[in-house]
Image 1 (spheres, rainbow, N blue to C red):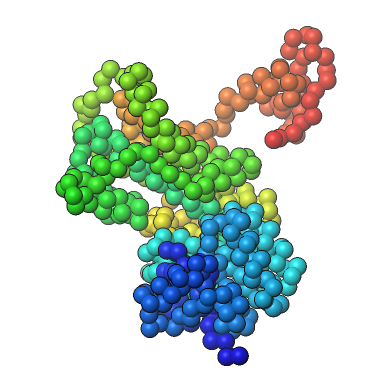
Image 2: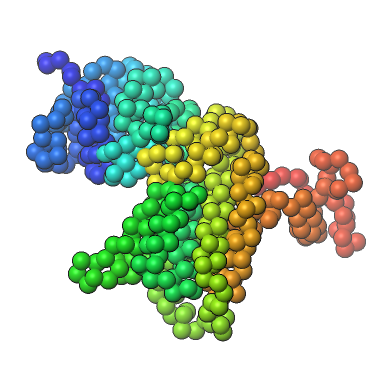
Length: 487
């Protein structure tokens, strides 16, 4: 038998897998590859992998035999049952201490389950989020590994070599935490990505529908915004999208695309987790539901002929001032999105017992990933100042930035409502801000209602917290109260 020469193996030669292999090889690692459709292996070796330190394998057995010990195998297949199927194929050929890595968009409970099950077999498991799309995978993604801590040291040199780097050379990759922590952080990343994208779309809608800006004018606006506090990958690519014309018609490509959005589930998972943990994730929830609403295209077309909005939908104010206000609304709402996302990670860390370093997470997101932006450097600084920060809004820098932006933010939401332009993410972000800064909310009445119809009890402002009371509101209800619980 020949001596194993590969530093790492990878299964699944779709877009992300193929580019990660080339990235690893470019950083000096020999990679063994396998794909269920083995012709894909041959095509890869004959094309992009030609002449490189990449070993093509037509079987799981050959892949395993090609790897140095402890074997490290990265699985890049569709999340769910397909990952379990690959693991089941691999396990009989592995030895104690070998490491399996799932790099897909896996739901974090599956990673927790696999980490525990493989540990019982003497194997180590990493579930890692990988963000950056095709370009990031090839040139340097953001990598968010979690799982069995013992698996990290052997994998660390490879992952940190291929990851994106910030200006000082620090890799956008570090250990996140045990079990499903890595995939949880990636899930929240994707939720914030949903929020960012929806906010940008709302800014586009306001400038295009209300001000009548065409693609060329929008290109100029987003180019300017990308030089300010909104400097980010998503603003940059949005600028480029507005500048791209369809080769066939010469029209702006964005104007030819049907307004129905797809989604793969990570945004929904983030919202479900927030509901389970009781953490308000209102902006990201609205972003998820905005995609759902967009998918009702035929219904919306029919409704547009029946349902009417404001009689006057024109804009008569100062155009440049409004453009600046939209920038501030986008910026302030973006802060809310990240504040909610990091609050969710705090809650999950407490619930699960995981330790998630928010400053490190912000650093991992500064480069390579879809939500990368200059803004994330300020978030890292905020958590460096106050590691146990309850909410990003309470950091002095972000508190000041919200103060600076909120007048324009409020004007934009007001104009949008008065002109009938939907801005669900911007308006829910503002409602979250106003709710969070309120020392008294109307939920005292809500508790009275719950106690009236269901004897669910309430606390009083003139008594100690933790004491619960019930009122016989009708004189017919008696003194029996429901058990106090939260669900």
